[in-house]
Image (cartoon, rainbow, N blue to C red):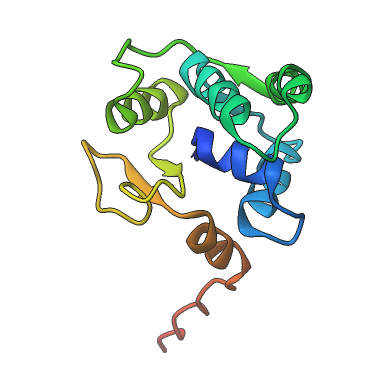
Length: 142
């Protein structure tokens, strides 16, 4: 799975119920034993900040939750960006992770056209893609 999970997907999965798309995406991606998910310190730090600010998430659960995520991913170094610049930070993180897609539900980014060669897709759209069977092979000539 050549994708990067954005901080909002980790947060939504941490807060939402198991049946919601963000939780399904995180379960599927982090549970993949063939290829570990890559992320950056910016993604983890932003996830921690968002969880700390979320009224439904217990403050004392933030550190263990981020540690759990960290234990399930490989952290790669990305170019520095303004932490408030989600687009620039996610593009840099995707490049550092060697992926061409970012799964995010950020209202300004989800299902947006490519930005500098990186595609942004919502967790709902990504789950639909994963559940859709591939097209049939073309008919044989002859």
